[in-house]
Image: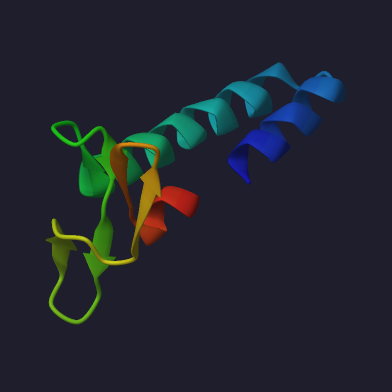
Length: 78
């Protein structure tokens, strides 16, 4: 959402609004990554609302692509 507002502000020539919303967009991205990103696995993990923890085990599905097992978390799609 912040990126959309920044884009529209840029189109309208409002540089200060554009810069403000770009900063907010970056802050949101960093906040999301700080909670969901697992650098070891190289992907975002699911968050359990019931107990406030990150799910580090398979929670959605496994796919087999030729000889490789691919683990996919629901959060990979959001």
